[in-house]
Amino acid sequence: MSSQPIGVFDSGLGGLTAVKQLQKVLPNENIVYFGDTGRVPYGNRSTDIIKKYALQDTAFLISKNVKLVIAACGTVSSVLPNLSDETDVPYTGVLMPTALAAVKATHNGKIGVIGTTATVKSRSYERHIHSIDSRIEVFQQDCPLFVPLVENGFIKRDDPIPRMAAERYLAGLKDIGVDTLILGCTHYPILMDIISDYMGENVKLINSGRETALYAAELLNKSGMLNTQNAKGTYEYYVSDCVETFSSVARVFLGSEIEHNVQRLDIEQFIADMGQNT
Ligand code: DGL
Image (cartoon, rainbow, N blue to C red):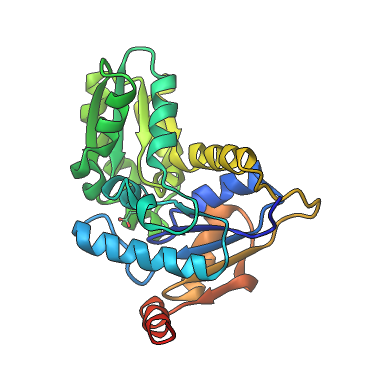
């Protein structure tokens, strides 16, 4: 049993889709979230920069005494699939649990993957799926407009702007006939209805946040680190840019009011101070 919090980070708000699932699956767990809203997006940056940011985000969460770090970011998880080798606490990204869920879900052996440009370029999902079942065909598509649409609140099901973007990005995957579609970026579940309307009800959408929350629960359970307290968990949120913007959009992600426990964190300054104190 451990009452230490679970640490979750993302480049921005997308990781909150994983937090929402964690809150459902593990309601007693305390959670510390860091959204790097001052440096979002990560998805069009180089591997070196993504690694630098991911290690800084992780260092901040470790300073909060977390028992598990979750990179709730498809980009970090795909570009740096071995980041666990460089962290001092248990760590998981979204890649492995999500790929496994997709392999289990497909009937026709055609899986689509949508994600940021960096995620698609890394081909990590393809590799991981083939390591489980080499007969599966994997088709990828990057959707670079989805993250800014979500971060700026263009998320209503009947809004023609995200609907047009979905049609443009997903037409090829629909024509190919994938029966399973991995939402390889944690921002995308917010556009789930729009994506589902376009792909049709027969295409199973895999939410990486949900699969990762289920995996985290299993991991903590197996290692005896679940928080068995009866009280509801507490949540702390940190962002590297405007608290107000985060609060208003985050309400949509989490479906609840979180204004009172959001704090601004200057991540570069935090890392500089850490260096001076060591
Ligand atoms: N939520 C991040 C992901 O899953 C957003 C990507 C970005 O920052 O570009 O990839």
